[in-house]
Length: 221
Image (cartoon, rainbow, N blue to C red; front, side):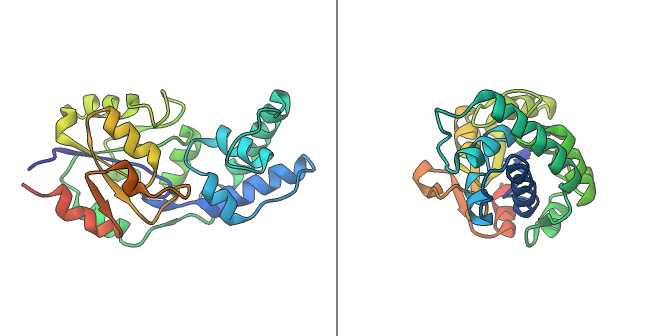
């Protein structure tokens, strides 16, 4: 086959987890007497890890304010972690056809590569019965986050695969840039958390609208 292994992003690719994040963010903002924000805004801020998400919420904008107080950020991140730990997986759901698609790829070695912290990743995977699908799980606190290629190259090494025989499946610019930096082909999914970006502009090898569309790509010879 053209590809020996598949590398998957988590949030926005396999799982719609934004409502959990939305609740945890607004509980954090309320704790600090900051105005709450809409679910749509939270969705547009997801994709670069929890610390950046919290700083965007405090700034009320995609662009983190240069005047943001560091001690306030640290306090907010700490509060968020406590709220999110209680919330993670409560309202998260698999995107359509994810279960069917992963089952169809059972024979292919797979890694999960997420910018989410391990404590939350493992809890979410367990709640949604996804853990058994992956041979390797690399989280945001294990090494450099995407768009760094480090986690993708690490996963390939653990799976005994050359980067040119791997393919990344994700929903954001970070996934595409990480894959390109690692010289790994990438499938961009149009339905996730793309931060308002047109993913076509980043020239992924494949662009799919539906999770099942990845199957013929991954199984081509």
